Image (cartoon, rainbow, N blue to C red):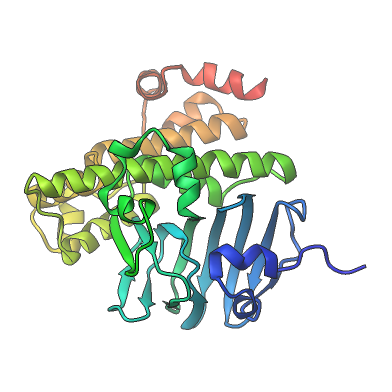
Length: 341
């Protein structure tokens, strides 16, 4: 009996030409899916470690999750299918070139919306040493119309162009991932469910990301109409560096002075740039990471509350309990009890 996890049907909406990507990927030995629902792939055409997962939620709605460390430079070519691609890049950078357009850099902590007319070639260049974590939602315009048919006045204007009829030109927009988007992408990459539960989880989180992206793109357009000046590429890169440093060292985060020195700006400007791009202060961002880590420890380990409090930087467990309750609305003890049920 043949392998039920065949590549070609699953790649159609994402790649346009299944035969092209089937040369780049093979089915992974680990398959947390039913064959009719999804497929985990491993890269084979270049040196890389990790996986991509493709989940067909319904006709016109596919989710692609990537967690890949690139060990050498690589090119991946696709052909567009007039599908909307909402690409959420949590980690790693790459370069995308759409036929007839200038290459664009995909930075970490970025949402990119891309629609290319049917049959247009797209090339993505991956760089050696980059650890990519991403989610791409591929959907036909009809899917957006069906799910959000009463929300026309709230749709990003750039989307209305393609939803109201055919467009002969590529559509491109980008904005920073907000806190909720980054959290949803991370949850999808780290998804531990299998089979039916896995599919339900992916669908729920993908719809959450889709909704958040429509709101974020609309808000970005509103700010531009009010004369808001978006961050330039250099400042965007500065915020991305700071955000990654906080993500990597959240238990003992660097000071604002250290972060400002690292990216070459003064402290006041850094705090302004970070709040503008991320939507919360550096302190609140670091605090949220600590609280989420503490919650994970409460739910998955037998460490005492005092030990966990000390691990996330609190000398006294009473202060930790106060901060935890302020963040989650419940005490650490209640959170642990709820997870044990």
